[in-house]
Image (cartoon, rainbow, N blue to C red; front, top):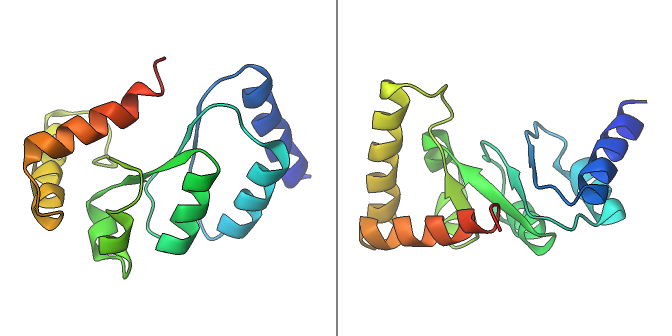
Length: 133
C-alpha cells in the first residue's frame, strides 16, 4: 500500500512537471526502481544523502541531484560523491545557526574538492538553476 502511494506521488510530480525532494532511508533500491518505472520529467533532489557513490550515480542518471550535508563528509564514498551532481545543505531548520553551518560546509567542501569556494558556489548555483527554469 505504501509503495502504491509513493508511486502515485511520483506520477503526480511527473504529470504536473514539478521537481520533488526525496528523503530516503535504507530503501534506495526500491526508490530507484520506482523512479525507473515513473521516469520523472523534472529534476529531483535526494536530501541528506549518505549512501554509496554507486547509488548516487544511479540517481544522477535518472535526473536527480544528491544533497550533501556535513554528515555526508563522514561517509566512505565522500570523495566520490563530490565528483557527482550534488547540492549542499546544512540539514537544519533555517536559522542564523544553519546559515553559519552552511557557510562552513561550503568552505570545507571546496577545500576537499581542491577548488575555490567561489567556483563551488558557481557550480552549485548552476545546478540549482535547473529547478527554477
